[in-house]
Image 1 (tube, rainbow, N blue to C red):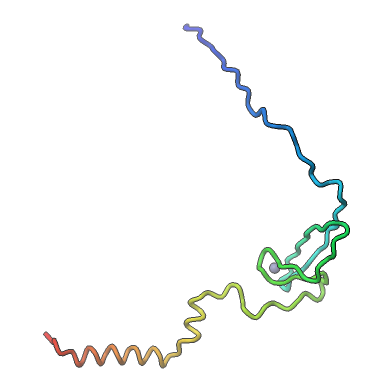
Image 2: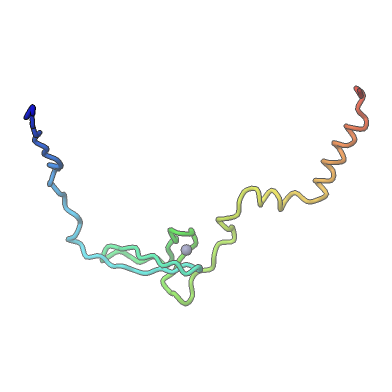
Length: 114
Ligand SMILES: [Zn+2]
């Protein structure tokens, strides 16, 4: 046996304990907000802060209000609509036909036909 059991002084995590003030001195008010999808958010406000009428839901981005029964209406621009969906909406079938026709015309009137 070599017996070299040199256990290294593993002093792990002698972290700094200097904890700064946590802001516990100021009392906080928790206010619940609900969005139209029923998500609840409970941000905290300073005791003397003015409570806003609406709050952006962190889960879906919709505005949330303090009245659970009557949440604010969702915004018109749906956040989950993709850019492609917009393009598809704008581009009608006729546009597609035009593009196809143009391509066919090019094909038919191809001067360098094999
Ligand atoms: Zn939400």
